[in-house]
Length: 395
Image (tube, rainbow, N blue to C red):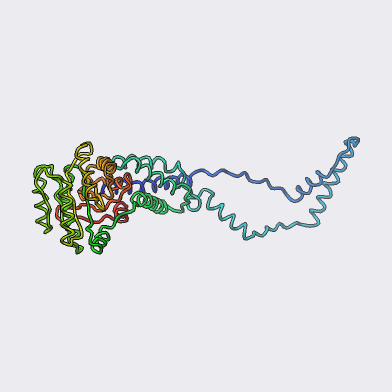
């Protein structure tokens, strides 16, 4: 699941580690600038130079007078050299000097102590990651959000060793992905429990286009509620598509849930209304409302969906999308959200989704949470979506 995105993120961590390690080696092997050695003088030469500096030659002084002074200076220097030998003693090195010396030996630009990540270090690799995310069906705005967040976290970081690069990059990616997936969610079990207390059933309306697995998903959600100890009913409000009523009836019988249906071509809003009344009368906590699959461009069917919403006033409207369609699922969810204000998302066929772009993008783009992922063919194969789970899957 999501193998493509896993490889992209893992590859980025490795590339950044390798890139900064190469910079480290280059700095270590770079030729150091040679500091010219200081010229040393004997004590007598130093004293002579100092005395020469003290000589002030007036304008009227003759050349002979100067020679005489110089001669006297050099003779005195010889006598002093013979009388006493000046023993040179090394100056004691203070603690502070020792520390400075140690730092100089390690090198100003040593990767071990001073390497700081700059934009230049990471720009090329992050550009590659952005292109890779787009290839994995991640929406453009989501890819840009991830790249900018990672760059902001990495630039200016000081690193001591190669493993720091991997750790910082992984942490930056975790933070970016968590922010993308961090849309406030809805707890359906809690909503069902409230319905049990109030006697007013939880009404969930399912919308989406044809072929996404919406009808099967409704049967899976019915199984989910049954396993949690609640009693659902299903409304066969797809009266438009041939065979739709028979299909949902087959699933309802398999999972042991009551189906409320009318004849083909009946008013879908009336079917949904009757299902809600049935649930109230029988004390059932949940009503699952199937609707006709429709393209977001079909105005008549979109209007019909709006009518069901007005009549039944569902507590939550769930968009069911196919994870394998990638950016198409994101675009379709946006259109349904514009029409009826979607409250949550279920992605089907997530187990077969190698790219993972839809799962990463869809909630962020329409600012609605992913509630469940379809992960198989049986009625039990549905899992509640947890953002932290996906972060761990991707990294």
